[in-house]
Image (cartoon, rainbow, N blue to C red):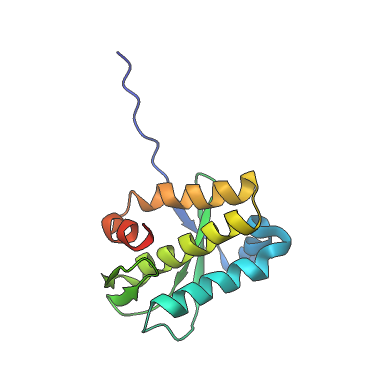
Amino acid sequence: MTNTAEKIITATIVPEDDRLDFLPKHFGDRLMYAENKVYSHMSAMCEEYDGGYWEFYELSNGSCFMVWEDDRKEVTVTSPNGYHGKMSPQAASIVACLFAFNSECWSQPSDETDNTYYGLLDYSRSLPEADKISAAID
């Protein structure tokens, strides 16, 4: 019997010098649409969100995500599927990214958009707030 361990997916913050390359690398000429979809989903789901600085992260599985930098420990999230609850700004940002990336999969179907969405989904399952993220997107 072979025992195969799950590969751990790691997240690395994108250095300041590489931020301008982040969106084109992951979304090509659709970078503005993808970025705006993340912001729009966050604005619609999180009553505390009013814009601000976002950090960019790359995942070891080739995917990525963006995180709204906010000092609050928790924010309120109400997702389109009826979920309503509290989670960290990072988890809320991942939810917004998952909705935006899923939308990109439908509007621009390709292996790249699928890999970006499913790569982030796989990573989200390893997080302490995985149950909240899952409830918000399912």
